[in-house]
Length: 453
Ligand code: GLY
Ligand code: MN
Ligand code: MN
Image (cartoon, rainbow, N blue to C red; front, side):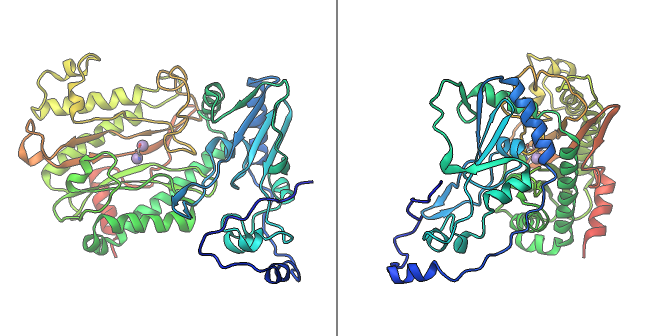
């Protein structure tokens, strides 16, 4: 039997709890309902566990959900479970540990706080009256179709079996990442939904353009976040809202600047859905609703590069095919602008890459429950691997002219443009999951005009 003998997580300023109050709190309660229907992930997760167990026969695989992380003093960040844990179990509650051993799969979970200890009314992290009703072990089990035991019964695993904990075992982390490279049908649906909600979030921002002009980058960040929370779980990564020259800082997440008429603004934002799959989409918009001639030329160049990159995505080609196709277009465009110190073809040689002064980053990464998904996969399986139907990757070339770059004409300095879409590899090519947002310069202008209230 598991007993909760832990001290509740309390703070120094919490009131003292005399026995009279504590014992009075333990009596006279009914129950409260929790609606936790069977989760559609259950069968998918079971198949994934079987596949993982087959890769490590006779071994014990430990995959924790993780716990709260302190933001400051007694205040934690909102909990988000470890990706592999949820991928293989479906569970999203904190402090759980999934243990897989051949055909034996058990989730050790922290249940709801029962009413015979002080936890339910005193514990800030787990107490029902502080943090809400956690599911019982039976509710988790019924919902996920998985055997669930109390976390306090997690064995010490000091018998003869080999134990691999994904937080310390590189091989297990690698295999788990590689198994996530190809998405199952349910995951593709989740990614499509994340992209669809993301498109609504972008539209919300364009609809509030007067406020955007008034409050700057912060208004875009907040507006998108509202949509993410309303329809999804969260944002999948900190939104990047780069007004003007901020667009040339690749991960500009301060979002403290103005949105200035006449300039461009780069929005790189993605909603994480309720089952933790995230979109990752970038659009670069003209603040005035219309591109200037120069902005349009540069935008159209990035668009052509992205279009070539997307067209290169299909089963059987190298993961890097999209990058190579996009960089070819950009290098030639930079040559046409008279910026390259050598010819475009010379610049594209693997031992040169001087064009990348203005393109900076890779064109693609895998996308799934993590924005940079499958990050522990081997080079052979990922960066040097081959695309297969079911993979989802971004195609996101950009051009970035830094404000202090003396090698470009002054009129280009401080301009950053990126276009990013989320591409599913299909049996006969590709599907753009984020295609509902406009990509061409004229479609962007039309879309902005249509959203604006
Ligand atoms: N949003 C980060 C990236 O595009 O990779
Ligand atoms: Mn990306
Ligand atoms: Mn992005």
